[in-house]
Amino acid sequence: MAFTRLTRRGLIRTSAAAGAGLALPTYLRADMHSGYTNAPGGSTVTLGFNVPQTGPYAEEGLDELRAQELAVQHLNGEGDGGMLNTFSSKALQGNGILGKKVEYVTGDTQTKSDAARASAKSMIEKDGAVMINGGSSSGVAVAVQDLCQSAGVIFMAGLTHANDTTGKDRRANGFRHFFNAYMSAAALAPVLKNAYGAERRAYHLTADYNWGWTQQESIAAATEAIGWETVNNVLTPLASTDFSSYIAPVLNSGADVLVLNHYGGNMVNSLTNAVQFGLLDKEVNGKKFEIVVPLYSELMAAGAGANVEGVIGSMNWNWQLQDEGSKAFTKSFGEKYGRPPSNSAHTCYVQTMLYADACERAGTFNPCAVVEALEGFEFDGMGNGPTLYRADDHQCFKDVLVMRGKENPQSEYDTLEIVEVTPRAQVEYAPDHPMFAGGQLGKCNPGA
Image (cartoon, rainbow, N blue to C red; front, side, top):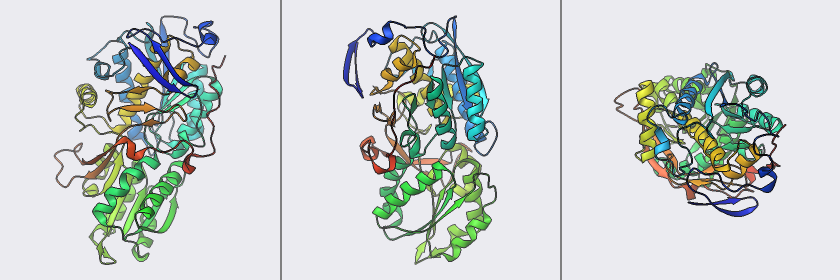
C-alpha cells in the first residue's frame, strides 16, 4: 500500500504494506530506539493524559479522560476496536503500539498554565511519558506544547481553539486536531447572516486569555465583513462565576446581539445570566434580540439546559454525525459510559489514535520520525470527512459544524441540532494569514 505525504520538505512517497513502517530518513534509521526522550525499553509504553479535572473546564476534562482511557483499550485490543475499524490507515492492529502494551498516567491541569506544565513535566520526567495529550484551555495548550518542545516529546493537543496554538505559538513537536477560532467564524458568519440579517449590532463578552482574544477577533472580523457592527467588547476573568454585572450594560448599549466568547462553566453561567435578564425576550432596533455562542459543546449545552434553545454556535464534531467513524466511536463510548461523547472527548480519542498510528507508520517512537509521519498526512474514517494535517503549521483541516440549541430536546444529551456541515474548503486559510502570523515551527526536538 502506498502512502503520499506533503511535508515541509516536499512530497514524499513511500511504499509499505499496511501495518509496516514507512521508509525513514537516514539519520533516524541509524538509531531507531534510543537517543530520544523516554525511549521505551521494555514491553510497555507510557502516554500522559493531562486534563482539567478541577476548575471551570472540569466537565470537558473528565470527558476527555474517558475517551483517552477508551483509546488505550482499543489500542491494546480490548473492546470493539472503535475507530480502528473505520480509520483509513490500517497500521494499527490492536496489539499496542509497535508491539508494546499501552499504559497511561494522568494529571490535573486545573485549567491553569503553571499547574498544567508542572503536571506534564512530572509525567515526562518521573513516569517516562513519550506523548502528552489533553487540555481544555488554549492557555494550557500553549504552555504544555512549549514544554513538550523543550523536553523532546510529542504534544497531541486536546481541546484548544485559540488561533495561537497553531499560529504564533506553534511548535514542531505539537499537533492540533481541534478546529480554531478562525474556522468557527468562517463557518458561522454566513449562517448568522441568513438567520439574523446583515444589519446587526453586536456586544461581545470575552474570556480574558488567549482563546477569548482570538475568538473575539475572529468572530468580529467575520461578522463585520457581512455588515454587522461591533458595539463593544468587554473582557471577563476566567475565574468568574456570576456575569450579572457584565450583562446589565448590554441592555443600554444599543446592541441587538450578544456574543458570548465563553466556554465551559463560564458559558453556562453567562448564558444563564443573560436569559435571566430577559435578553431573548427583548426587541432592539426593531429586531428580536439574539445570543450567539461561537464555540459550543454538548456538555455546555446540557449544563445550560433550556437556555440554549435557538442559540447558534459552532462545533468541531458531534455524536449525531452519521459517518461510519462517528457511529463507531459513539457506540463504543456509549456502551462503556452510558452517554454519548462530547466533541472534546472525540478530539482526545482521535489524537491518541493518530499518535499511535504515526509511530506504527514510522516504525519508531522517535518524536522526529513521528513528526514526519504526521506532517501532510491525509486520512478519513475518524469523523468530519477527509482530513489533512497541514505540514506548515500542524493544524488539522476538516469539515466544521454549525449547531443550534433544540427547542424540544428528548434528553439531556439531545440539546443541540446540526444546522450545517460547513465544507473544509470554506474554513481553510493560508499559512501566513495575519491572524496566525508571527510564529515558526522550528525544528523537531528529539530530546535526550
